[in-house]
Image (cartoon, rainbow, N blue to C red; front, side):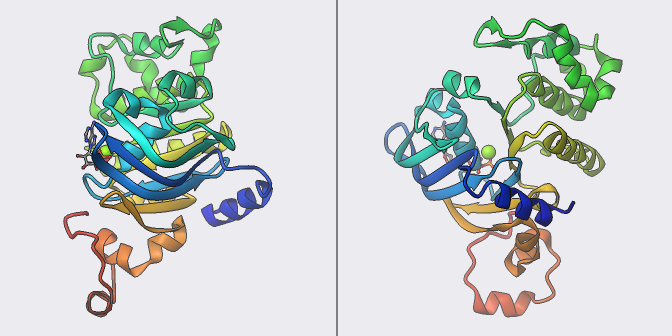
Length: 281
Ligand SMILES: Nc1ncnc2c1ncn2[C@@H]1O[C@H](COP(=O)(O)OP(=O)(O)OP(=O)(O)O)[C@@H](O)[C@H]1O
Ligand SMILES: [Mg+2]
């Protein structure tokens, strides 16, 4: 099934279901006065992969952090608007609360425990909030189902694993939580294109087979839109564009500024005043 067919079928199925997560006109401030995000409304429907795109500082990580509650620990606050999860108002809920509701956030930068082995890192996925939350060792087999490569490096200290292996490890560790909503921050950062392709293909498999809704914040627009159902493009803390991913990938402004494949560059620059920066590639 193509992304657009899935988008149609999921939205039809979920006609009376609320989205898994929905932001309604959200404003986010850090330290009570630094305005990072303004007037953002977005949603992730059940079973969808949502791409959150935009240049450095656009506000992508901030949005993920306020959905997962981690932003609270950085003095972030939703100062206007609402965040809903399964239709319930979860605005400014803490991270523990959101984890217990099935939200798992994979932070930017492949945060592995460097001095622990790959296996020990995976075992950490069995704990949540300092307590072991599952007792069946088989639960972490899900990690190997999608990332069998990890079996070969179980005894390697995670700090010595390659960037790609570390990225697989953090996704695998997150899967052990059996999340309902997985937030991924820059999963492609610094990885070779072939590796990004492999990891993104695996994310699609996970999305379909485990029915995990995903929001992927990434600067790699092409690859992210390729696997996403729906996309949002941010700039300066606001949503500039949003559309089904296949439609978004075809929009001239995205092609021109992001994908570098426009055939109508000059006409577009004449008639549109897009603020999307050239450096955002
Ligand atoms: N913990 C924080 N405290 C104060 N300001 C912050 C904090 N984190 C981010 N910001 C600011 O909020 C704005 C949005 O940053 P954010 O990290 O969400 O952007 P981003 O789109 O994820 O960028 P990048 O692509 O570089 O990761 C920026 O101006 C940034 O400096
Ligand atoms: Mg970020």
